[in-house]
Image 1 (cartoon, rainbow, N blue to C red):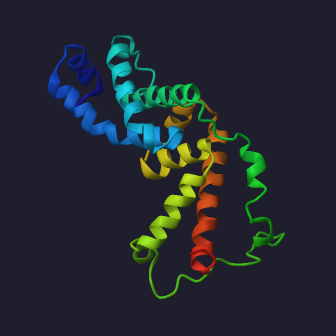
Image 2 (image 1 turned 120 degrees about the vertical axis):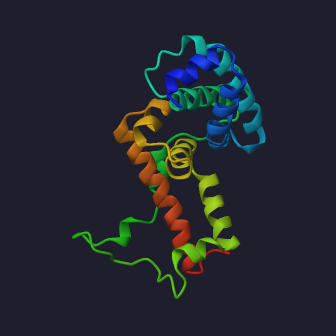
Image 3 (image 1 turned 180 degrees about the vertical axis):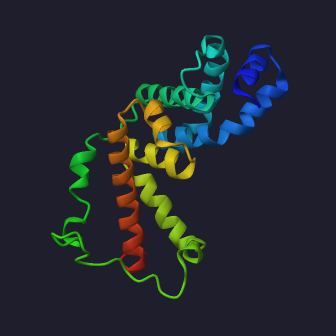
Length: 200
């Protein structure tokens, strides 16, 4: 359905239009709320965000897609909730990156110093089906700093494009790409440790 027509139907109170929007965006909203404020309060945040969406819809100017606008509201709601409940996540992604063991992985010419562990006979797709590896990935994502976790969740799990992610999080595109790279690197390191048998 054309987005303008959908918005007009929403403004007119069309229940089917509301069901369509909820079906389309609810999952991404929950993922984003979890990434910012944690699973324990994600459902409450999304409920508050839906109320904010309904109230603000008459003022929607169409500067971004409806999905991006809704996710911005979720992001703002989650940040407000986190601050209110004094759930702070340590800032300083740059300082934490120091702990990533990549410096010794590459030679000065860019080739591997220490290549990734061999995946063995199984393909990556088969390995991803293993509960153990899924657990490692989930824990790695959970341990990411909030900004990295949110960018990774939106880009790699929810499939939101980088331009929209940057609008939602109000960061520059270069900053968004750095956050995504750092997040992917951290998760990759945990997968690599798992493959090398360094984690349980």
